[in-house]
Amino acid sequence: MIIPLIKGLLLTIKRFLNPYTCVTVQYPDERPKIATRFRGLPELQIGKDGMDQCIACGLCAKVCPSNCIYVEGTTDKKTQRRYPKIYELDAFRCIFCGFCQEACPVRAIILRDTFELATYENRGIFDKEMLLDLTRKRNIQYTRKLEPKKAKD
Amino acid sequence: MGGTEDAGRMSVLWWLVTLLKVGVIFGAVLGIVAYMTLAERKVSGRIQLRFGPNRVGPFGLLQPLADGLKLMFKEDVIPDHVDKVIYVLAPAISTIAAFASYAVIPIGPPTDFFGLLPEPVPLQIADVNIGILYIFALSSMGVYGIVLAGWSSNNKYSLLGGLRSAAQMISYELSLGMSVVGVLMMSHSLSLTRVVEDQSNLWYVFLQPLGFVIFLIAAFAETNRLPFDLPEAEPELVAGYHTEYSSMKFAGFFLAEYANMITVSALAVTFFLGGWQGPFLPPVVWFMIKLACCLFFFIWIRSTFPRLRYDQLMYFGWKFLLPLSLFNILVTGFIMVIKE
Image (tube, rainbow over all chains, first blue to last red; front, side):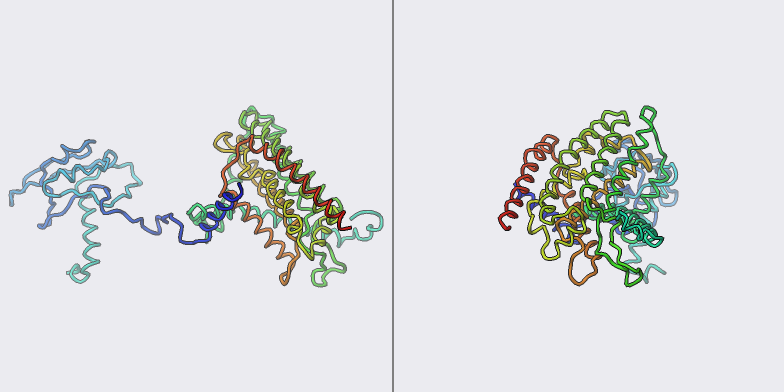
């Protein structure tokens, strides 16, 4: 009867004395490790020509189970290439299923690790520029990290 | 203290020193209570693989201050249906009973503070020759605080919590008292100073190991701590007797619980662990070290064991602990007679 009690006490004191057992991530100070397959906010990608990769085919809007994507496309008069005039994503409705990413024929929308979606305003709709900005910021960080000299010119 | 021959000692200096002792011990106990709450959260956090509070101040050291402020500025709700006089009185009784117990606990031998005082003063507020009876009387008073709180709240859960705690504290107080009797038999005195002085050669924990174990178990029940925290039992009783309390009235119960914990720890140190006795370091430091170890043990147990069922608790107290403590007295007496 007493031995299991002592065993329990030994276990807890071991946990207490070993400083490396804490599993808490001190979030604002240290970033949590996010899996590569994590599905965060969908981000619009930027193509090689600097324009958005999206061709406004509307498949993402079609496949979206929560109807949170709205696409309105036009044609660029010079290059005759279609691009989205309006691309809106309602983050309040998005369920981060990743169907849009799978449906996209040109990989223009990808769910990455953006998970901090809290805002001070009552606004859940991300428009095209905001969704592109997510990628732009990422590109800046990326280029700065890899080729700091090239990014300047 | 008292009697005609002591009349001369009731001088201004005596009053000053006594008041100072009261102030220092009261302040120290309050401080220990405050940091005990932090230590409890920190230690049980580490045991559960968490950090515990670490946002307020370095290592969360200002957390007790923040908690205290929060409790002070909370709205003091007195529900309509309560019995107001008793409702207000109950936390006061609990707190006073908890804090008054310290008056007789010696934290060091008589000292004249490096020659500052003309004659040595004992390092306890009052060296009552029935100190242990005084403490047990006060801890019984503490039960009133909890029972009255449960009763006056006019709430099923509170009443059940109060009843449970009354039954539990009364039945375990018996074992608590009985476990100490062995020590008192060996030291031939009820004065706590004498008990400590008697342990200069060998701590009573080695002479009374059974008594020590019984004392510890009963102390856990007496202070309503896990694994015997049935009066509060959050999942079933919604915090028990202090469900209806808020703000500083709640803080009163909180203080009382932790102060009681410190009292029983100090008692364990005094009766079994040699009080202030120890080599090299000053006596007060030894006392504090031992006290800290005891308090750590409280937290350690709390974060290790689950809560007992109520019938198990009563069964254990009456059918196991009490006979065992009586047996301990019997054996102690037997050995003492043989030795003589």
